[in-house]
Amino acid sequence: MGISRRAFLTGSLSGAAVLVLAACTPDAPSPAPTSGAPTPTVDPTVPAGLAAAGFLRSSWADDALSGGSSSYLATGSTITDRLTLAGSLDDRLFFAGEAVASRHAGTVYGARASGFDVADEIATVASEGEGERVIVIGAGIAGATAARALADRGFDVVVVEARDRIGGRIHTVTDDDWPFAVELGVSTLFGEAAPALVGALALAGVDTVRLRETATGAGTNPGTGTGTGTAQLEARTADGTPTDLTQAVAAALSTAVSWAESTDGPDSGATGGGTGGGSSTGAGRSARQVFAESGADRVSTTPDATGVSDADRVAFLLDRIVPARYGAEAGELAMTQVGDDLLPLDATLVTGGLETFVTGLLDGLDVLRGSTVARIQYGDQGVGLRLATGESLSADRVVSTLPLGVLKQGAVEFEPALPAAYASAIESLGMGDQEVLWLRFDQAFWSTEATVWAVLDDTASDRLFVNLLPATGEPVLVSLTGGDAGRATAALDDDEAVTAALASLAPYLDLVSASPAPGETGAPDETPAPDETPASGEATPGS
Image (spheres, rainbow, N blue to C red):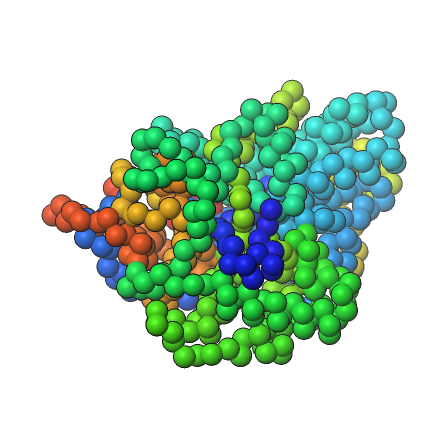
């Protein structure tokens, strides 16, 4: 289940997850990191004796085939914008994907649900099993779900995918040097919609593990048991002093939500409900604005015995937790987006390859990989596609799962042009950026069994980590960044990114004792082989 505001109040916090999703997109210029992004500490100092044995990283900020990680409700936008984009044109051109999902928008669950929904919509207006041809643009989870559902109904389905691999913003990397498959997109499943996908993965034979569980056997910390009672979140200051993060954050969040609901009405969607939804009322306020106007951020600036003030804690929520969850700064994100799933609680980690699940959906179907769509022409007689190679395809109907980021770039020409309402919705919605950096160690340099680590140090570049050791028995950490911090991280080269992350870990590395070998910097020597969506050790366009 997702972390609710009641959970905040009881001090039961857990993790943070990157929810980057799936879609296929055409080639477009790689977006540059936004100006004014925070700059990580110059020449960070890696604790003596610490070195990562390997790393894998995403770079969605630079990925021309997605334009970011996932969509969000920006200030001024509402669920109406998503529903507008979900509408079909002439019953010939249909849309699916996380950005147009009617529920759980901005998540892998919404992307999958939209695939089922669009198949149902086509089935109501088309002739099933009578030779109708449907082209699906995109082999991510939305496109693959739609393609499978349509094929099972008797339609002739062809999938057109710009990448050379299946999955879109779901990107699994399998490497013999790693103990399990690494996800550079969504890796942890949590919230009310998670059980359905976890169940589907189980039926497909894709391995998962609950993060709340604690592994036993080799590689675990001394005294590790079943995980019962083990804290899932731990916050530490720069010098390693543990400090509470929950109480002040819970109170501020409760104040902000209550104020938004009383101002805009209980049905305004101000709390988001974990769906990425919202309504057409109260759409103008950002999360940061609501915190300010409600007085939620007017808390004590006096440090307590641990050296941290409540103002520091609320700032951490707005500056780090919110961007890591939604890929946007709190000043850009509509309060209507903020739901009950800010952080994962009892999350499920996918270890068996989420990309294999998507690939399985397309088994037996025609998939044209490496095929970039440049133009979509639609009308009452059908739909025609022009590929970047100059080739043309035609179909009775087309399902587009082009990501919002690509639609914003205008990389695909529509003929006729999309209606004004569609263009307005595309402009209003936001496209976020969430990045992950996986670090593998030969041994654990830490003793805490907490699943999620918060670093309350303003000089640290990476301030949220997920500790996979308790659940998997493997010394693997995952850094989570988003918004400006995510874009700043993506702009670093490999050595810089790894060094900055290792330096940020200093408050938790209480088992580091050995000194580094001469010339050792703390950054791993290896860089995994690149593919067209780097994130496997590359700093160029992402997964």
